[in-house]
Length: 236
Image (cartoon, rainbow, N blue to C red; front, side, top):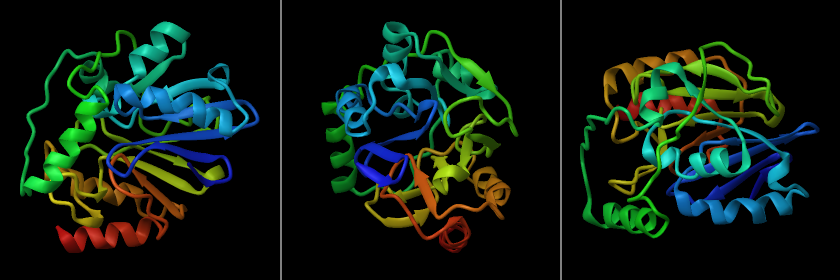
């Protein structure tokens, strides 16, 4: 699905994977669920690309529903996977997350579990080898994603600012489609380790230019980062 020139998405509003391209190739932002691998090649083809054009995978954090096909693309195709150094142990499967569920509605929860289960969400391989980055780095990958450390959801959660596609990729720093309640619109994400820290970290995104705010879960938001943050603070 093309969102804008040089900006594509695979998956659905339940679990998102994004593709950014420039004349040097393609960067994959988050690796979703294992079964979303089957959507990658067709989407690349729609862009006039192949897997050989993928220069790297960058992870907004190391949760299992963001690393789905990362090990496969690394192991079978030699494509490097990168994550913030604080979430590297999580991506490698060395630590488990102490999650906070919050409010739950049965219907949305079952929908998310069904979608995830059908796409291998119960058998996700850790990433055996990851490269790491730090806050403030402009990564040497297509789109030159700028790393913004926004801890709270996990210690190593980050956003990626990519001005060339007018977008901020926020991972689970926020959601626009709550997988446990079904609520739509910018709001705090579930399964957050430190909700207060996550809310405070949003201040690091203030002042960024970006029409597109692209979360790990929920529909793409094109109302700008400032409005998204305002709504989240209002909800919180």
